[in-house]
Amino acid sequence: MEIFEEKELYRKRIRQRLAEHQKLENLHVQEEAAKQLLLSSQSYQQATTVLAYAATHQELSLDKFIQQALMQGKNLFLPKSYPHNFSMEFFQLDNKLSLQQQLVCGSYGIREPHSHLPLLAMDAISSLSLILIPGLAFTRDGKRLGKGKGYYDRFLSHIPFPLPIQKRPILMGVCHSFQVEENLPTEKTDVKMDYILTPSKIITCNP
Image (cartoon, rainbow, N blue to C red; front, side, top):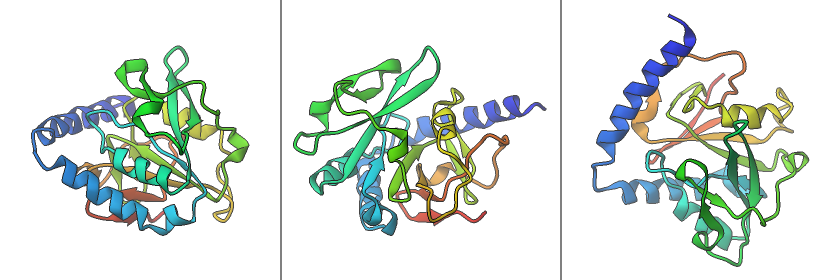
């Protein structure tokens, strides 16, 4: 089986699980738990710059975390996607405004930051940057399965990996606990995560 076909089989199975999960009534409890874990993590507390995301209905929401991070004065950025070339850029949120005041409905119906906000320069990403990355599935050793468009793969390709651990940003995948798999099909261009955030714990990924 080709790796593309194998990935699509995984995506189909995980999306079925997500559809069932969305019927649960305790999603806000899981979002709060993830927020508390993230706020108390060393990765977040040491970061001066945080790249997050505005969740879709299939992703673990970081809205509560983002609002708290803004109140704490973090430099926080959210992505805007460009479907014509499957790329994205990150824009900095204003700490003086609420999250909802700074979002518009963008590509694919996903909430995105206003484009008049300051644009992230790639050379501003450093060892003091925390990048929170959604995915359909992750493994404990840091493999990630995205939705198939390659937005994050392209964005991360502009960061010169591999870098010495003391110079590179921290990559943290974000998902529900049931989205952590034993193994996933990957390619050489796939970048591994350093940590996986779930509502129950933060997993340290072993190479």
